[in-house]
Length: 225
Image (cartoon, rainbow, N blue to C red; front, side, top):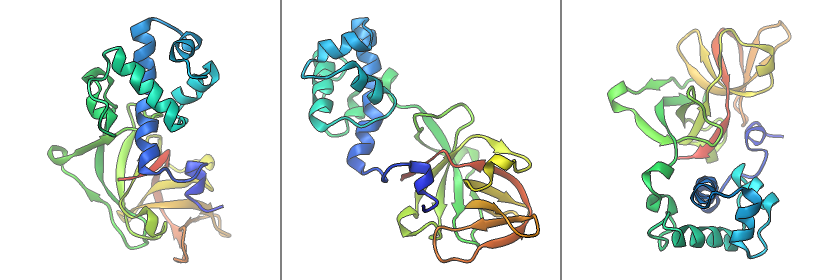
């Protein structure tokens, strides 16, 4: 299994499934609030064969079939939660209270062995939509480099639980890794024969051996910019 497949545990999302996965939980919660109903009652109100287990899966981030997504959006429009359903960017039509949580893009990290971290000044921080499992410590950085494969150049990396020093549960995991020489890389952490650390890539790039890791954090999500 390739390194990044462990993060997704499913095929990389397409732009189409990305905006559906981000919109549907917020719309469903807004509908339950508006109608003061639970999941089963909302499923009954939506009709079209939609069931409570489907509602539960969608709230956890599963992507509905397009016909079911359209039904949810139509009901939200009828309920006055969405004013414009003509655009694919449904989130732009949601009330501000339903807009996605945002996190700061802190800078750029290298996937290649010689890449360095490029920090962004506080006043220049951009914001990106947070993953659904985000918390107050979630940080976003952007990959610069091709050692995870050309697909992942300019992808966003999210992490939150920084460990100093590296803990055993990070061994074998894809992590954002801060080295003593100032480099910050996206690598899989492994142990080498001498008991030190070896950083692995997703391509034929050779491993980085016997490095001093100052901190590391497991990647919680990868997605295209």
